[in-house]
Image (cartoon, rainbow, N blue to C red; front, side, top):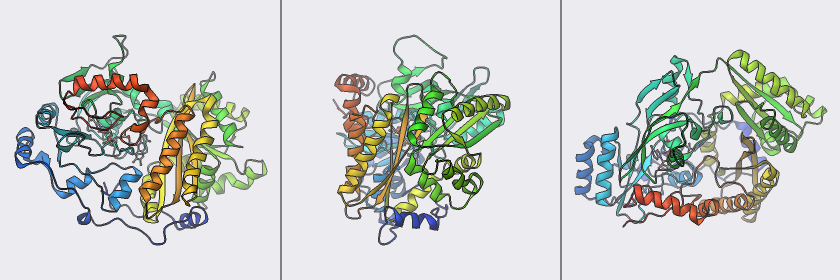
Length: 544
Ligand SMILES: Cc1cc2nc3c(=O)[nH]c(=O)nc-3n(C[C@H](O)[C@H](O)[C@H](O)COP(=O)(O)OP(=O)(O)OC[C@H]3O[C@@H](n4cnc5c(N)ncnc54)[C@H](O)[C@@H]3O)c2cc1C
């Protein structure tokens, strides 16, 4: 993973020439390309762990599993959110863990947490490090030092119960590794966030992640059947069960706990038969409004939702088509054809159906029939296939945009159907207004990313020329305006990115002071010295 951005360091630049023209014609870009500084020029704060404390960690884990070198500290200094990347690329992350530890399993986890609790060392669980909300920010809180607890040595498949369609894995296993294990056995987890290539399943569970196929396969919270949480006070072990009425859902207290209670060392997940058939295709709607209404109908009494649903609004559709160049969709479906039928400035939806051939044929026929009745025009498979083949490419584009001096950020929410159109408009206006007032007009785009019977999630992407003199202030202005608008409009502060550090100021408005107090009580019980991931989820650490 690039320490300053996304993915394979050998990946070539991904921004095509016509994308630069598009930028010039819309938001503009920096006067000069702005590459990241060299690794050795990244300035880190001096380490605060004395030799004695490092020795105690090495005694607990073995020398190789404890690192405090420059590279390890830089790699764990931040996640992959926009402000993280701005700071890293400038060589000024501002904070860094004093050391990084790599436990290999339950025994080492326990010993590591015991040392950290005794020595007042804050612990930040670090899976794939792909958090975009400051979830892995190395904050010491009121402790004397902070370490990143990297789960990358905890990657085993512990057991596969085929009869019960359940796999048990260590928390650090990466999503592609698990799929590689399941595929030859004819199985899949079906969890495909855009960050799929690097995420850990423990990190996904800790953030209540949702994949691109979650409309069909369910989000991670529906997949986790049991888990073992290693907390400073004691472990919680919840066996895999299909269902239980044994009190309030403790699984759901730990899923989404973002490392503030302990480390998910092991988890049991529901798996499904791998699909034999995958059909991805495009559908055009005249405008976002009618597309949303069609999805609401499919999700409601018809129960005819595809496994992947993604409906872009007008600006996002326009940008997708502009960036598609002269390839498949434009040639085959023909924009002229759409324009002639009054769909020219419309909205593109990507629908994906997966499963056994017969099942796909039946569900697809049913859904497309309804969509036609609801005003949608099917435009064939090429837009769907193009989307499927580039579904993990977006993060590379972000790196290139940053090099071009372009701010690019995403944020998401979910809301009831009755409030969706108002919220779509309000968030768009809030972002445009905040950036426009700073003299950097924005291009704000949105798509419906996950659909439910009672509502849907909205996923916003916005671009603006980066304010070189105050990139973080520019980002904060847009983020604050958007999140205020989300809260005022009845949306959740996060549908799947989690709370982390960046959404923490709004957490009380989402769950109330009483809700926060309940979370704090759970933390006090499991983490009495407050070492686990201080400052996240809206809870401050409270060492006693
Ligand atoms: C380009 C990009 C695209 C993304 N797309 C999506 C998407 O489509 N859907 C989506 O849901 N998210 C998405 N994300 C956000 C991110 O990938 C998810 O939040 C993911 O679940 C984080 O997994 P991770 O292993 O990288 O966790 P990390 O980033 O390492 O950690 C995330 C949080 O979980 C805690 N944590 C990590 N491991 C454990 C553990 N074993 N036990 C306890 N706590 C732990 C950390 O302390 C932190 O608070 C995207 C991010 C990027 C950069």
